[in-house]
Amino acid sequence: MAESTPKYQSTTSERAHGFFNTKWGDAFEDSMTRGKLRNYRAPEDRENLDSEERREFFREGAYPYQRKISLDAYYEHKFPLQIELVKMQNWVRDTGEKVLLLFEGRDAAGKGGTIRRFMEHLNPRAAKVIALEKPTIEESGQWYFQRYVRHLPTAGEIALFDRSWYNRAGVEKVMGFCTEEEYDRFLIDTPLIEEMWANSGIRIIKLYFSVSRVEQERRFKRRQRDPLKQWKLSPVDLASYHRWEEYTTAKTAMFYHTHTDFAPWYVIKSDDKMRARINSIRHVLNLLPYHGKDENVVYDADPWIIASAEEVFDVKGKSSYGTSANGQPTTSELASVSA
Figure 1 (cartoon, rainbow, N blue to C red):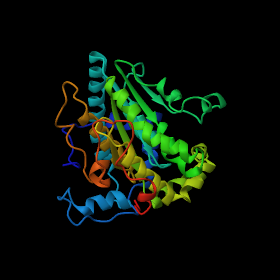
Figure 2: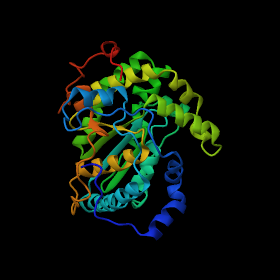
Figure 3: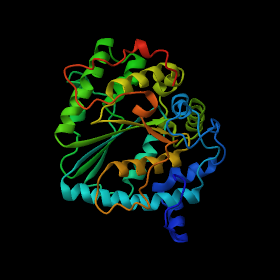
Figure 4: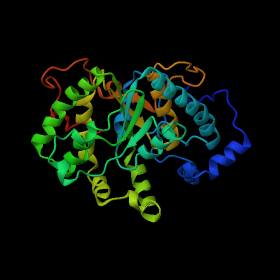
């Protein structure tokens, strides 16, 4: 059960430390907006995970819980999960594994806050966050993937990308920052390149944080009011809000063309940031075969919060690619998909 509480009790001092430690700052701010979620819709059948209703929840942005997770429940889940993250990192170090985690999603979907919870207690010498600025003039003249390749994980390392080469499938496509030819070439090349990386021993996990339109608007307004968060809101972010459907079509095309068995996409509903954080951490831990895994902590993530693109977008992951992405729908064929 996704909402059950692990057998772990945090102390009062731990909770106090949590609230006043600056690393927990936005978690404390989230507590100021506890309560009902605007996009709530009660599932008619929570037990049927293969239902069209569940697929519609992920496609249409409806949220399956009326209220956000309580702070007590959040911390009771988070502490033991972070202990498991440390175990996982030790396994990566000891075995020479290479782990690549991608965090994608619309603006204000909660990617950065989730990354901070992943990194909070990891050894920064063997775990790095990559959040690149827009390409320089020099980088713009290079092979598109070149500036990302240099940040791929080495043996014993975890690399977390806060946005990635998938900018081309989203903002660059929608805002006209790339040509149609460059975009089409990206959709063909990306699975081939990711397959090469996977064959070299890199474990690739791609997470897409899905926020509803009403919740994104609320977060944008909050950023506009908060002088400490205004830097997070750019003119491109505001323009993207008014191109919601175009981003939706681009997102769906991205799933169709780049979801593979060796580099799968997972969609996380993030209207409740805290619930998204604990479920994304739990899911990543579930996917990695590290030693000493505590099954009382690392059980299945909430299936109404996280699902593979294959489950909810009817995407068929390919185990290997030839010379093209033949057989996948074109962007024009996806125009009627509304989620």
